[in-house]
Amino acid sequence: MTIIAIDGPAASGKSSVSRGVAEQLGFYYINTGSMYRAVTWHVLHSGTDPQLAGNVESAMRDVKIHTGFEEHRSFIEIDGIRLHEQLHDESVSRSVSAVSCVPAVRERLVAEFHHLAKTGDCVVEGRDIGSVVFPSTRYKFYLDASPEVRQSRRDKQGRRDEVAARDRVDSSRHTAPLTIANDATVIDTSHLDLDDVIGAILHALAAKGLPACQRA
Image (cartoon, rainbow, N blue to C red; front, side, top):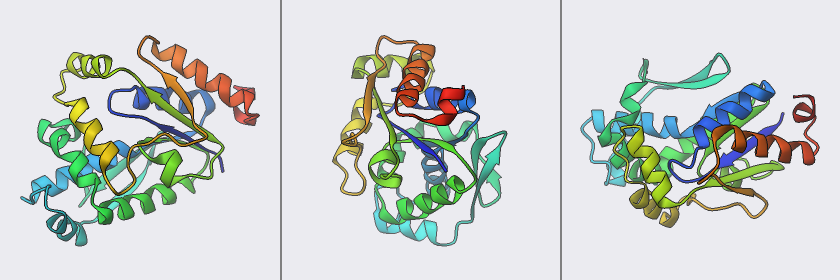
């Protein structure tokens, strides 16, 4: 089983790049961010204050979480509901960093990530994939871009997401903070288009001897 970890802050291009790399290689794609957003939606939908860790833990006790793949892309269902547009509600964007800090949430979802990864070779994107979730993988990347570029990307998407504020929370949290793994390849995507970033990752993977990449 091969795991390609692609980490980085909000709007660094992780999702689009990870999907593209997975498609090029025929790997499964796991979007961990959407799963944290789904749990955040559940917390808010249940009327729980996302800033109160104990209450968030209580909201997680009885929730039924089902994850899997559809056309090689991960999905998550919360109490039988598969979420799509709700994941990018402004309220979810404001609260996802706080909910993601709660150890009980991370433990539950990391177990799901490991379960999904048993399916086959995967590209996994998130904030702590190379540093915490799959630290033993040889294939680690960290995508970044200037705060101005990342905020502009969010604005163009029509999504309310204050990336600088999320950066501060995600980087300073005690549980699995956003950080660059020591052996990760860092790519600044500020002035690169999608194909350029995908190409850079595929080139780096080939240089590391990944057989699937050498065949792509």
